[in-house]
Length: 126
Image (tube, rainbow, N blue to C red):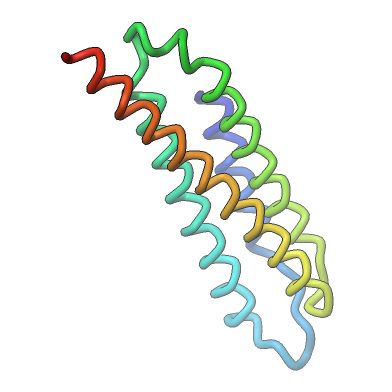
């Protein structure tokens, strides 16, 4: 988990020097990168919360593969963000849309797993 956090922080710094055209002020590009970073950080927090909920519990073994898959998807989202740092203003929108689609997919999958975990926890209580 610590290694993943290091990768996440590294990806954040990779976004900082994004290319801008003359027509796009640097502050606007930074704002767009910050927007993506906030969204990615929220997904990271939600996934970390799911992992924390099952650690040391009998559910950990049951949901290990699903959580591992979400971890891989989180890394893929961060890789999309790293590739954004290499884009020019002209290709930024296309790459941003692709990154947002990956984030939305990860969001849906986290939500689906959270519901499954909630149901499993409730079942275990009764």
